[in-house]
Image 1 (cartoon, rainbow, N blue to C red):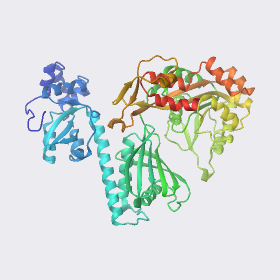
Image 2 (image 1 turned 90 degrees about the vertical axis):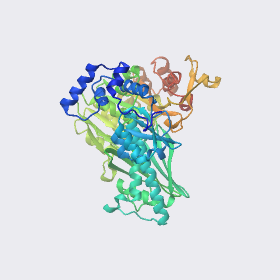
Image 3 (image 1 turned 30 degrees about the vertical axis):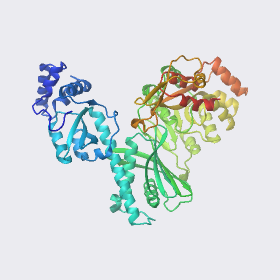
Image 4 (image 1 turned 180 degrees about the horizontal axis):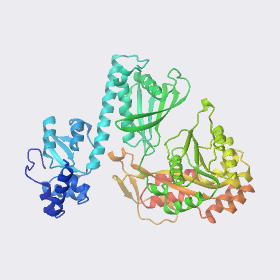
Length: 566
C-alpha cells in the first residue's frame, strides 16, 4: 500500500514507462519538445496520451506495478459520501482525484496521476489523515466527481430545507424575489435536477404523502428512491417548480402542464413539468427532454443491420405514412428524430408539428402546438400543407382528425411520419381503422409501421449465470443455449440488476398483399398469419428471444413482452 508518507519522491514517469517497455527515450524527448514549443504546463502523462503514444490502460498498469498500488475502476466498490466530502470539490477537480472510503483512519483515494505529489500533499493537508492511493482512469474519476458532489449538494440542500421547515412550521408561500435564489428550496431543486440529469434519469417524481414528500427518479425505466423531506416543504417545492414552468401557482385542484429550460453548472436542461392533485397534495413529475444518452447501434437508428436495411427501404418511398408505434417511454420520439436528421440531408423541405418540441433539429422547421392560442395538431397540419412541405412529422397521432389529415397529406404526395400508441405493428392498422380512417384510404397511404420497445440490459457488473427451469426454456422457442443471465443487483445499477437499455424493433413494410387485405377488411388474424409466414417479419418477441440467448437481457424482460403478445 502506498500512503502519503511512503511515496517515492524522485520517481519519474518516463523512467517507469521505459522500464515497462511501453515508450522509448526518443518518444519521451519528442513529447518534451512539443511541451516546450507549446509552452504548456501539462504533465508528461497527459501529453503521452494526447499524442497517442501510450494508452491510459498501459500507463496506469505500469504505475500500478512500479508503485505497488492497485489499478481500479470506480465501479469496483461503492463510493462513501462521508469520505468524498472530506476533500473539497475544488481540490478533487483540480487534481483529478476522489476519496471513496475511510477505514481505521486511512482515507482511500482514487487518483489519475499517483506521481502528482502536490495533489497528495494537498489532500493530506485538508484531511489530516493517512492516505491510501489507488490509480484510476481520469474519465471515470471526473464522472464520479460530478455525480458524487452533486449528490452531496442535494443531501445538504435537503437537510437545510428540512431544518427550515422545523424552524417555520407553516410554509404556505415561496419568495420569488431575486434575493431568494439562495434559499434552501431553490438549492434543493437545482441540485436534485443536476444529480438526476448526470445520473441519466429520464424523470423526477415528487410525491406527497401523510408525513413526508418523496423524491424518486427513473433510471433505465426503473423508479428508484432518492430522498425524503418533511411534507411541510411540499407546497414551497411545488410553487417554485410552477413558477419555473410558467404554471398557475394558485390553481391546486386541476392538473397542469408546463415547461422550462435552465442552465445548471454548464449543463443545459430542458424539462417538461406535469402536476396532478392527489389526496395529500399535488404530485409533480419533471421529465428531461432531449436527454442525450448512450444508444447501441446509434448509427442505424438503434436498429440491428437487417432491420435498418428494411427501414431505409421504407424511407425511400416518395409519399406515404410511416408510423413508429409503442407504449409511452419506448423511445418513439428518439427514433423519429434520428430519422428526421437523416432525411434533412436531402434537398427537401421538412416541417413538424409537435407537443412538445423535445430537441431542436438543424434544417427542420419545428412547430410547438399551443391550444390556448388556437394552434392544435389539426390547425398546425392544415397550415403546414400550405407551406410547400416535402416531408411532415406529426409528433403523435392522437385522434381521428389528426390521423385523417396525415393520411390525406400522404395521398397528395407528401411523406408523413408520426407516432402511435399500439403494442405491435399489425395493431397499428386496427387502431387507425378504429379511428375512422376509411379502408381504401389507409391501404393506399400506409407505407410502413415500426413497432419498438426499450429492453433493460442485465448489469455487466453483477451478472449471474444460471440454468433456466423448463417453464422459462419454453419461452425461447428453437434458440440453442446452455445458460442464461440475470442481475444480482449492485451499487452500479442501484441494486436493480439492470443497467442501460437496448431497442428491439418489429418492421412491417406494407406490400401489395397487405394493402389488399386492408382494403377487403380481412380479419386481423389473417394479417398476423401472413406477416409471420410469408412477409417474414421478425417480431418483437423473436428479437427479444435473441437478446436473452445472447445474454444481454433477462427472461423477465421477455415475459413482460410475451404477456402482451399472447
